[in-house]
Image (cartoon, rainbow, N blue to C red; front, side):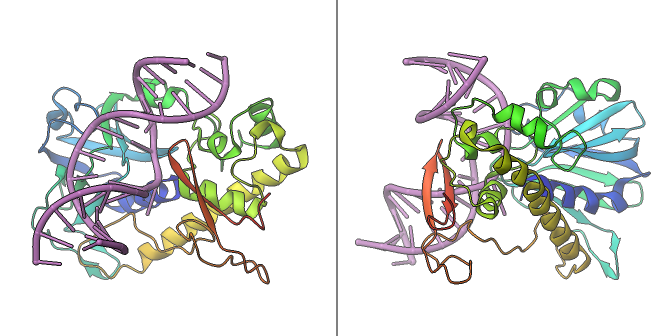
Length: 283
DNA sequence: ATGGGGGCCTGCCGGC
DNA sequence: TGCCGGCAGGCCCCCA
């Protein structure tokens, strides 16, 4: 799930359940995820009203009436399961507890949000709302790709002289915040750029073309996530999934979707991560 | 400073 | 059917 579009989809799914409402009680079933939970987290997440839910990169920020903000990161396998709440015309009953249900928030109206994370690469932390931006996990993040702080001149400056592959550069959250392995592969396909091309070797025109493509890929994925939410049929109340047709990601050995291309999609490993690309369309 | 690799965890899938 | 290796959308940290 968890690249920017998936996290945004989860945030939007949580909005009607949490925003403006009171978390009555939070139960914590594990000592921590990637890091230990902050002290007394269960208490600090009980009897507090949720003022709003924000997203920064792949993090969800829950602002609380206690002047604290809950930071949530889904890691690789984190899920937020909603139950006991009317969503459209569907009512989700509380399911039986599952393995890896680490944190359970029960709202005053009976709705329940369960954080389930098998691999425990996710994270939760609490900090003063006023200093949320200074949190170590947020402080060094680059601009939001869909925000005003991201554009051609910024990206050109960040890539200038860099000897790292463009794949790695776009994955580096200090350059821009929110892209993950899937969407970097998809962006580079649309841009016709081989993932191993050195970032510093891109022309200004290529960088200029990247900016709208990044926005386009993310926007489409958010739109797709939203549509899957409206199409809620599963009784388990699971959020964060959306079906999406990828052009290259996960398609090793399959034929390129470019009309008339006919080339097989290839997979290489860069910095330990799989990169999928069309050797014909991407140079 | 910069770039690359290891490691954290569990689950799943394909091959034998 | 069972076991084993490889792989997974995240990120921090250490090393050269």
